[in-house]
Image: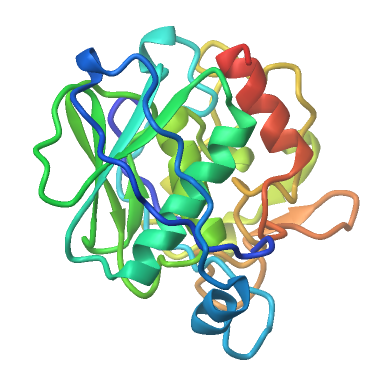
Length: 263
C-alpha cells in the first residue's frame, strides 16, 4: 500500500477452475470471469484445512515504509484486473487463487477479472503471482506487469489471498487509517524493534476512508499480536472488542471497494 510498496500479510471454500484462455486485453471486450469449479468443496476444504479449525492468516513482514491506504488517485485503479499465475503453483493452489478472483469479481462487477492461462505471454497491465519470500503486493495498479508474492504454503489461505488482492486493488491496512487512534491503540513498546513502520498512520491528504466506518475485524486489519516482540498485544481495541480478520470479507470491506470503484 503505497505508490510502490510491498506488504505482508476463511469463508466456505469452493474450488474454482480456470478454463478459458485470456487474449491480449486490447482484443478482449469481455474477459472471462473465473467460473465455479466442479471439484468438491469438501475435498478442497480438507486439503487446506484438514483439522477443520478456523483458518488464520499469518502476517509476513512489510519492509517498505510510506504506504498508502484507500489510494485517492484514480490512476492506481484497475479496469481489467488480469493475473498470471506462475506455473510453479499446483492445481489446488491455482484453484484457491481463482476462487479469490471470483469472490472479488462478485463484489466489483464493474471491473473485468481474468486469468492468463499457463503457457501464455501476458501483456499490458497485469499481476504476476509468484512464490517469492512472503505474502506481499504493491498497492494499486502500477502499470505493466507487477508482482504479487504468495509463498507456499504460508500464504495459501483464502483470507491471505483476498487480503493481498485487495492491496493490489488499492487498499492498505485498516489500522493505517487516519482515524485509527479513535478506535485502537498501537502499543509500540511491544513491537519488534525496526518494525514500527508497519504501524504507520496516514493523513486524510494521503488516503480516503470513503466514508466507511472503522472496522477492527476487517480482512485488512492486523491481528492483536502481529509483529509482537514479547507475545503481548501490539494493537488494543479501545472498546475492548476483538481485533483482526474474521477470515472473510466484511461488509465494510465490500462497501469500501464498491465506493472506490464506483460499482
